[in-house]
Image (cartoon, rainbow, N blue to C red; front, top):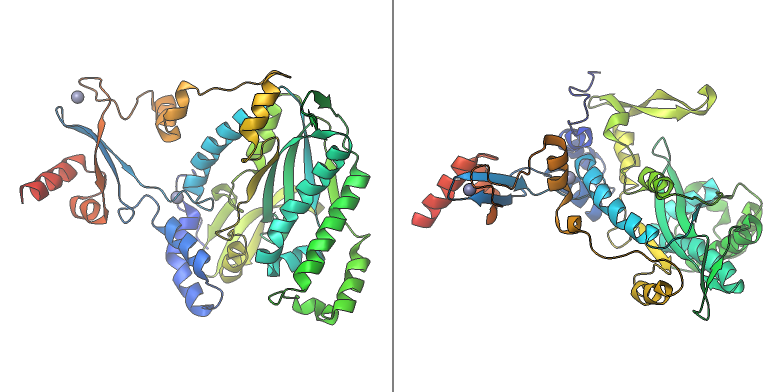
Length: 412
Ligand SMILES: [Zn+2]
Ligand SMILES: [Zn+2]
């Protein structure tokens, strides 16, 4: 196996894998390559290529221009996910730090048998996992007389791309009293009653899903496919390894930022973890429990790698990050107005909000604003949206050729 040509990180390895091996995979497993999987692969394969087109910014007077190719914006695209994550983190941090309160970091995990059932019934059960995780905390807080603010982030992938569904969440240490007249502090969320009510909500969702016509039981649990045996099966799981980790409260914005950045909008495998690959095999780094969690190379057949990876492409209708309570999209504005009178609330638009992240990064790294004309120092204007034909006929990134092409077109 040849090592990857570029280990500096600029070479998008997943894109290369999709471009070169997806066709063979799709031919071999036609029933597995369903709509949203093909869409995602196509988006990433054509990310920042002439097929997607781009925007042309220019100062026509001084003949300076800058072409911004359209990106795919997909979470699985290692090129796009970092910039999307950057923008998203900025917004999330703004919401989370708008309230002057510490946060608790909580992780919900279900036993592996249930993870497998959820994997086969994503459409029926993933949303219920969100509802159970937020519901048990909202229920507990409500009984103590307050409404907290929460962000929930669902992840489905384990280190070896196995299906391991879990939710990370940040919750305010306290919340707005139910009467809406004061802030109630709470520095302790007790795991026992919260986990118990989480389990009950998950079981309720599982029993309801079982009655649905499309519910599918994994072949290894075929013995539990009658209603009675399914209930017995659930009873046997009650005392297994359910995990609920609740951290001590987090104090600073920096700590919140670090937690969020680690879990947010990242693809299940990063460019950095992939060591090398060919059409048959791929090697990537995993944390090895037996070697004190040190990272060691892990070999997988390419076919199986793609199969595992595609399991983690989210269904198009499913949002994997959700806000609840004080931060719920529907009520956030109204709650913030009330909270403004009770505790310090920060807000307001900053100057940076209107400038896209790629442009700010370019300025930070190279010290040059790519959209300022070097002669007149004025901001370049958007002069054309370039489609596939313009980009491919004139040559990607060649400003002179694009201008020539557009002029020729307009003369004709
Ligand atoms: Zn992309
Ligand atoms: Zn100019």
